[in-house]
Amino acid sequence: MRKTLSLYGLTFSLPLLIWQLLFFVFPLVFLVALSFWTVKNFRMQVDFDSVNWVTMYGRSVFWKAYGTTFALAAAASVLVSALAFPCSYAISFKLSETARRWAVFLMVIPFFTSYLVRVYSWQIFLSDAGIINVMLGWIGLGPYALLNTVGATMIGYLTLTFPLVVLLQLFSLVFIDRTLIEAAHNLRCGRLRTVFAVIIPSARVGLVIAALFAFILSFGDFVSPIYLGGGDPTTLSILITDTTKSGQQWPRAAVIALTMIGTLLVVAFAAVRFAYKGRTK
Amino acid sequence: MSDKDTASINRNRAVDGALKLYIVLGYAFVFAPIAASFVFSFNSDRFPSIPLGQFSLEWYQAVASDPLVWQGLRNTLFVGVTVGVLATALGFGAAYTDYRYRFFGKQVYLALALLPPTIPVIILGLAMLAYLSRINLSGNALSVIITHVVICAPFAMAIIRLRLSQMDPDLEAAAWNLGASEWAAMRHVIVPFAMPAILGALFITMAVSFDEFAIAWFVSGLNETLPVKVLGFLQGQVSPRINAIGTFVFVTSMTLVILAQLLLTGRGEKNRPAADE
Image 1 (tube, rainbow over the protein chains, first blue to last red):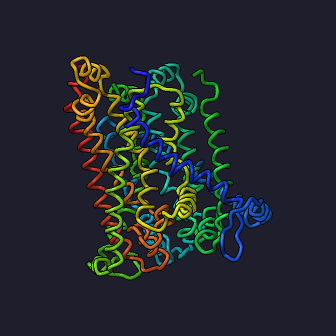
Image 2 (cartoon, rainbow over the protein chains, first blue to last red):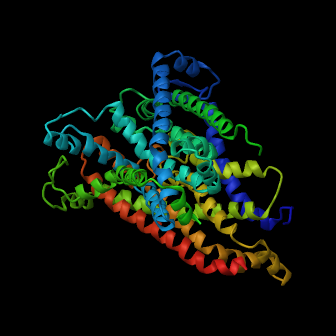
Image 3 (cartoon, one colour):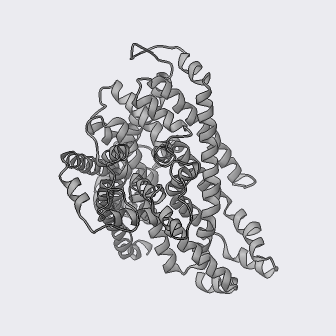
């Protein structure tokens, strides 16, 4: 391995570096500057004024949306982890090699279908005259208001995160040393206890990272809360789209966005610390 | 090893059965909306539900006769292909850098190369909109391309890096020893070896770009891509057309993904013995 960067080496390494600096780092840094700009007569002015921060942080709407978003994302990440685990567990321990490969391939497919289309499809299931209510009608129940509820938002979050969480959990479960599990069985460790005392601790890193990704995705998603949750309760992402798209209040939207990034950084840091806690690496 | 082991570890048939049933349920949840979208795209009812109405192609006709949809499709294809090529080129460069070089600040370099997909798209969309309009680049196809490359390049890099890690590092050194210049070794050794992954990355990044709507919605202005159009339909409640477009996009994306899959596994396996020796 050569260590010095030559013209040859730079030809390959620099383009991505420049691109990500120009179009990834700079826009995010610009967001910070933008949050200190002011808006007068519907026009943005370069400024250094904390007015946006003071206004946004002084509004109860903002804090309510913040609490809602955080609670929803946290609930979604716990729920999806709990629901996905038996599935990824079964795929990694109960299926043959070939079946497992197929299972992985099938779980990848949703990434290449439009999330919007899937959300619209859930509307077909959940609406008042939708599939689920019709089926419930057959056995004399309902109709229930399923759409525009928090539960519907949750289904949207699950649609978004379930495949990713299953795949991430799978990757950590597949690499568990099988002899550990056999040892546990030989030592008369029960089935459930093996799962909680051996398998989950061994796969902790993957499980936590999966939950973290579920949190990040749900925290930033605006499609499910609007089109399945009916926009009520308001989440931070809805607040951003409203502030950006209908008003010219980009600096305030920047404040919301930066608060979200800050929150995600703290959560990610805490999650990674927890994931690697006690590991000597 | 796995088959024999699993058989010896797990004895309870009822639990096994229940777990397998659970897998089926999990996949049913994942595929229910996809399947419903496919079925209802051929259904005549304005407000889709069961029992099904008649078989009908009216939503496809409605979509096909909408010039804005065609416009969106052209934009999507143009953006997708450009993004695929650019993101794959940048991703290849980064993957090769990571494969071959060790340098100060490499961690930062890799973080920059891999982080973008973890930032919520809505935040990235807002940041890009504000930034690009500041440098007079917003509101056109170019701004969508720029942003999509940012989020697609990491996927390309990951795919190509995985392939490079299957390559014997001595191969490149051997080419140099035999008198090849660095450029010649790149052209005749590295690129051919990584080719399946390069094509795979090309198709995957295209597919990611085809489906991305949030950032495109923020920065595209009047040059809407097809997914942004779908978002418009979703807001406007002219709904079953979404199923027709969705089915079309699904078939397109899946074709790309399956092509990528064939390239990554099929040809990869043929090449692997040579690399392992």
